[in-house]
Amino acid sequence: MALSRFLVAVAAGAMLAGPPARADEIQDINLQFRNGDLPAALDHANRYLAKNPKDARARFLKGLILGDLGKTDDAIEVLKGLTGDYPELREPYNNLAVLYASQGRYEAARDALEMAIRAHPDYATAHENLGDIYAKMAAIEYDKALSLDAKNATAQTRLKLLQTMLGGQTTQPAAKPASAPAAPAGEASPKPGAP
Image (tube, rainbow, N blue to C red; front, side, top):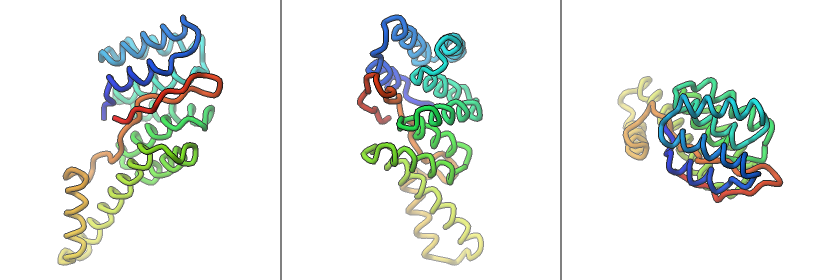
């Protein structure tokens, strides 16, 4: 599940309020990511983080890059570390949920989204994604009910409805990634972009 590179660029650009050199480096990493040069973006992010290990924006971008590279477990570790260091940020929780959902770990996805909502009760993207996760979990349960009783008309109807709502997907992720995190306290915060 690739994140819209345009939305990442817009949101990451909006939150760049640090010193110009740092902002320029983050913009460069973001531009490489947006242009699909993932190996270079990852290398640049790693070099930047070696000097600035607590930079939330760079760590978030690194998580997005790893996710796009298909290194889901590494991306999860980066985002989990980010939520541990900056529990007030909502986007890392949301993207963590997307990664968990991509692995079929819907309970973990639900838990991450609930943390995002606890941190920011007005975070519409997390509420929408949580609804999608619950719908996905319901579809799984209706499918199980049908495997036990194939003639269960109610379960058939509800499963079809959920499959239609989920775009016919029953094994695909049911969540949308966020585009960029809000900056930690003391830094500028962007308007969240929902893909």
